[in-house]
Amino acid sequence: MLETLIDPFSQGIGLRALIEVVILGAACAPFGVWIVLYRQSFAAESIAHSMLPGLVIATLAGIPLGLGAAAGLALAAVLISVCARQRAVSSDSAIAVAVTTLFGAGTLLALSPEVPVRLGDLLFGDPLSVSTGDLVASGALAVVLIAALAGGHRALTLVGFDEQTAPSLGASPRLVSLALLGLLALTTLIAVQALGNLLVVAVVVAPAAAALRLCRRLVPALLCAAGLGVASGMAGLYLSFYADVAAGASIALCAVAAFAIALPFGGRASRPEPNAGSPVEALGSA
Amino acid sequence: MSGEHAAISVVDLAAGYTPGRPAISGLSFTVEAGRSVAVLGPNGGGKTTLLRALLGETPHLSGEVTVSSGVAYVPQTERSRLDFPVSARDVVLMGTYAGVPWYRRIGSAQRRAADEALDRVGLADRAGTRFGELSGGQRQRVLIARALAQGARTLLLDEPLSGVDRPSGERILALLGELRDGGAVILVSTHDIEQARRFDLVLCVNGGQIAFGPPEVLTADVLQRTYGGELIVLDGGERAVVVQHHHH
Image (tube, rainbow over all chains, first blue to last red; front, side, top):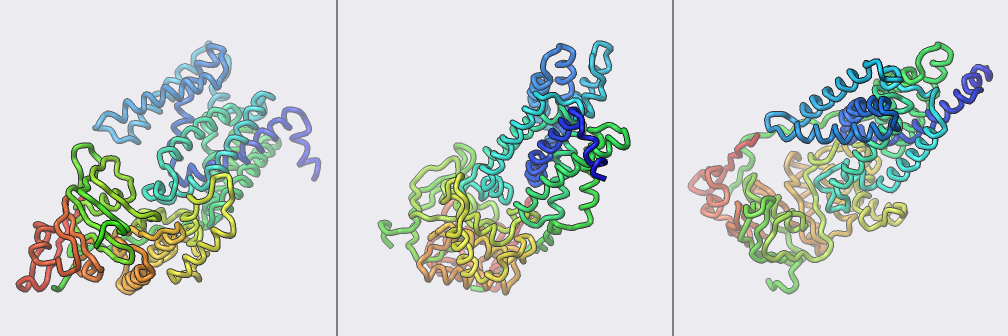
């Protein structure tokens, strides 16, 4: 039994993969709780996908993937703001159009014969191929994320609960949203190398969404998300080792399975009953 | 009323969100401590803009606004996220955040202040209940408790009785009365004429200041000018009905 548990990690490759998924799960999933609460899951998806052309060009040009991804993100931001300025287009349509365009361009580039890596590696990642440098980057990301979540906990709570009243209670909604998007971009940039372009969102969002169904308070939800993030990462590695399937996809599947299991537990409050508004609002007698 | 010891003093205020186009203008009034004020006006008449100006949150403002220290804003409960994973006590604790540096933990002093505030609004037994699971009236009282935990002596409430059933509304009005008797300034925005009559002072606002004074200022003429076409006067001025236009 013990051997079954230890075997996948007995070699350097497996051990590095284990450290990577534990670090990313413990840091990304609590961050994901705020992404879910701020309804930014779509933005997370968009940011990841719009990085693809940057990643492909980086591999073609032989420059670090992170640099290419950052350039891809900058391009996406410009494209989205240009699309959003067209009055006829709603902002989510603008994002969808910009992101799909970039994703399509990335796929076309990746299918060209000059690309040294397979498209699959970029889309689905491979935790089993992480280098020591990737581990250091993930460790640094985890430190930054956890410090930001701890230091910004009250501001995140105030703005998330009621954006309009937050300034009078000492938090700036603009600063908080900006910080959240910045951290999201940084997280995607680093995690995409191990987990791939399509799967990084699953690891950020799925354990968080599961934790929010299971827990009724913020701090327990954040801790629960971290636990689920680590657990689904490890479960994915076991699945990959024993079923001989791709590690990145296995991790994403386990994260989504955690959400599916949590779904019946209705942790989140039901929608408030709508106020029945009568056209005659006030009756007064003089 | 002397302006010297006023808790709120407003002189020729104009405020809004677009430069050169104030949502309200020409407002001048003073309120002393221990008084309650109803700000009466139609939707879109500038009631919320006035509250924001008193908080110093409107980007464009001219004239003079002085609010003695310790002012808190109590929003409508629908503005907050009801699916947010926080208890009633968590929400009240938010009122203490600004007084604690970000690197310090929320300690027992803050928790005590929150529990006292919850007790004052009569919700000590619901401290652990999730905010979204409370009734509309209870949520409004929790938000009032948050303002008390802020240490505020001036409370600005935005339509605190909208979407609240009548008994809960009465309970909130009684609570506001107690706070006023304790020396606090209560300023409530409302579009309900009957409610407005129950406050010490009434300020009628529709773009500008229509009237300010005790409830007796609410004459048929003042109401007509406050509500314009939205007001229907019945029984020869004995009763007035406001017909709200719904904006989409």
